Length: 617
Image (tube, rainbow, N blue to C red):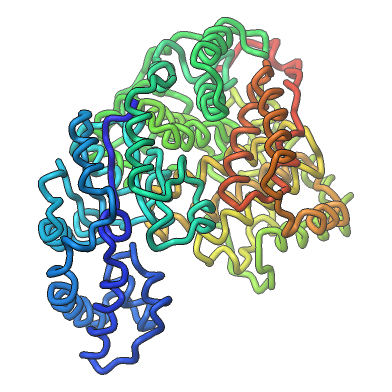
């Protein structure tokens, strides 16, 4: 049920983009600087002024000329736009806001303008009194598309993400909403064209403000499974693992099944059934007692010790109360992400999917699980390399070529590393992982490493927004080269989580998240002592590179069939796979590779004989 509507300002409520372009032009002219084409200026609408001027002038945001331009813009905007503001309000906005207010909505504005300028524009337009809260870009550390401004609105109004909807006219608004775990409505009458808006996968699209109001009112009065899903994600009845180190996937399945549109009662039935008997033949276990208290001074001491999970939950829960979620993520996650492969990537999935679902408690659990299971992929070993790789796929093909040339040598080396149970090899690995087999092999590979893993390709320095789609393509190529492979499937589901986590971090930390994922991914692949042949990967890449599904009944029907199959699976990794790949398919312009991979289901692996031994708690 929707109770909070958050609006962008320029291009969503008020038709100011044309006035903004004129204000930019007047400012640059006053400074004696060349004026870029209108289209170039218009493309910056929705970003903070300093960033926009820096981009247009080719300068750093701290350059004194940028500061002069920002100051001049404020003067021009007051003179050119504010006097006309009342006439620039989009049709339907005044009556629509009144209707939403009458129906009990809390109304807020989240804008890339500074707060004072936003208040001035809303006041001049006659809209300020409609809004319970206005938040500007000067009130947060990171502007849109980072989630900070949306999270601040939720915090100040004490609203769960599941009850909010963001309305905006740019992909910056939509990506901010997704990163904050909030649903979104894209309006097609503003700055970004419909096709560009669709690339950011909004929840809904509207062509008029009247349609926005209809969608919001429908959500206000239509009961949704959010209540059931939120209750299940907040459940604290079970430990995060069972039978030693096996991850409790129940909440991952809830997020996936809800994302695939399953009815609330079916989701709850799955959750209860999984708790009684997982596909591995064991039930979930109650919470474990803690032997330690976690504090700010000792929180790193127990990383990877597989202890104090409940105490870590209490610690992160307390810190979120004290600092707010956004600051906790910025402060602690960069340290934790080097250990993202721990618990066979499931801690990362728990955190990323908790953020994606807007579940505060699942997010707390994810942070705690990352600390509990931490196992570093050692990104500090990464060395600068002169490889000409332009993308993650180029790097994957290069490494596969190395394996082709040295397969017997590399295979023998990997088997020796992952099979080493000497005292020295066991020194840095928790004894419970030896019982696992798979997690022990991955831990040993991360401890040992290989130069091929740590040679840093140039694309790691690109903006993460460019790197994530290519990483999705590379991980999916690996999965299609060995369809149904249980281990490679986790590269897909954890990558989606890693990207969701990175959305909450500053740019430098986002780049580190890309690097950490790449290094950890290679450690996982190398631990299997094999890699698909370069020829096979290249052929798949050729087949799918640039291939896009045409919209229409055939594609829709195929997805319906895939989703229907996934929903009936006892093996919960399959709905997780479909949930992620459909989201990625939507966000990347319907790339065919993701639909093809979504239909390749996995099977529950048999547990090794080592599980006959009792767990090493």
